[in-house]
Length: 137
Image (tube, rainbow, N blue to C red; front, side):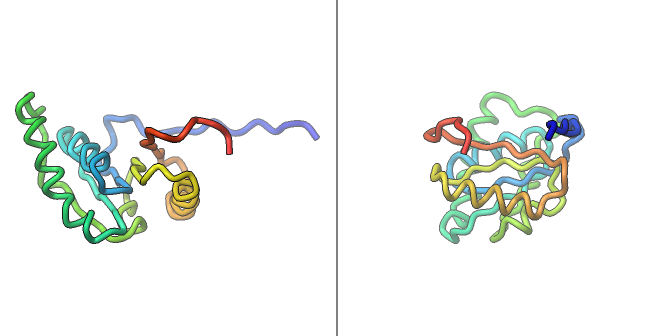
């Protein structure tokens, strides 16, 4: 059976993205949130842990303070951060998703399956990892 070529994927132009979802609210997720907020992009961040959700505003404020020292770009908006209990509510309306879950392969595989089930086709997903190798599963 001959291989059927896949249709090329199209993604939004970066400058057209107005809403980002971040999945995982630890230090890495908070840093990504601050980065997107400095670009005037609304950020919805989800973490299943109440402790992580409670710590998020302080972590974002800490990153925001460091960025302020470097000089905030025009349009930076700290007030565009929302914190969610579930992935589903955070990704609703997102035009880009940044995954920042702990570096456990099974967890990330399950998370990507869940994201695939709720995201519209064409929404890109970025992944943060520092310990997992880039190998096929």
